[in-house]
Length: 263
Image 1 (cartoon, rainbow, N blue to C red):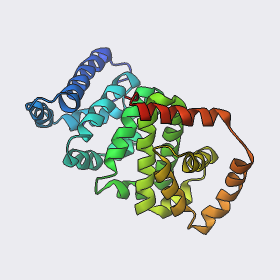
Image 2: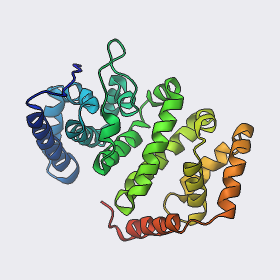
Image 3: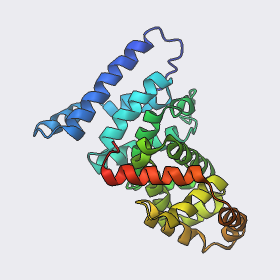
Image 4: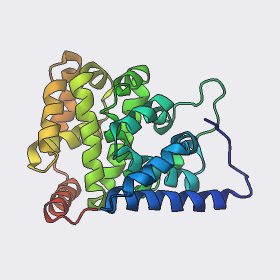
């Protein structure tokens, strides 16, 4: 793979436009189109080493990275072998702002890219698909604190995005759930952010699509004594307080999912 800094590159807008065309074509042909020939498009992308070209662009400027994220999100929803390859090539590290490549890291603009809701939705889908890869937990183990911190940040941002990102928020809860099943110690040690813990508590009681997953996550975490001690004041605040804005968002998420209005 070739990593390069595109800031100041005079033709960057053409790179962004070309990548946008590719991402939209892939999304239409691989996810929305029912034509038998859709596998031909995926094969063409892979034969051209599409992953090797696109994956380094996750670290590029937002106008490029957003479309790179869309491409990878689409490809991740086809075959598991694509996801396995993305994980091997460092997609997770790029999403979590881990300096890449290790030998000579280039500047990453992923934080700025994830300031855009559409990019967050692509990232959440990619992360959720990556949980099925054999190497997912190895990457998590190597970057535990950073990974959980960035995952929490993304989850809260998606929640604040409202009903339009309800499905994507559910994807992030799936990621937390996968971690709680396979690496509960990592989650119990690093998940300390009060907003996310309060959100999980409310989801646990809310009877929404994410409720079973949230309940399982908290059930697993409560088995850890140190987590229970850290969790106690958060639970107390939750029990004493009522957040009408949070309650409204829960209703909106549920309503949009039940009526199928979420894209």
